[in-house]
Image (cartoon, rainbow, N blue to C red; front, top):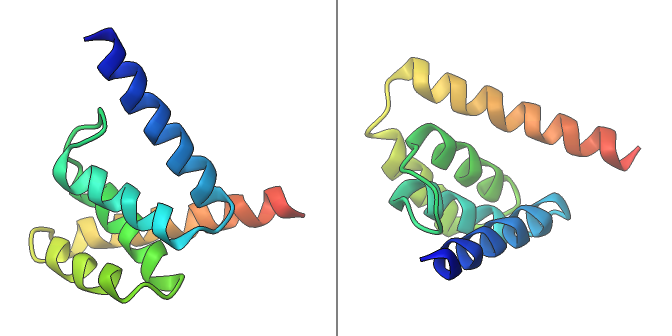
Length: 98
């Protein structure tokens, strides 16, 4: 059990690091993790929408479809929260790069 947790944590840490470097596939993978509750995270559709939104912004067409699918399960307020979280994440990445 401990090995599974370590592996899941390693996967998430690696995807976050790749996402911070602008890797669209990593952004998409994070959306999948939060949409499905894999890799040691719980299902969080707001967080999934955030990552799919970022991946869509990076040009991944599959992320656009996934974002639309998740949006069907969210209220307008939840989508707004996801969009604000995506903007905040982008802002924090721009600050790190400066």
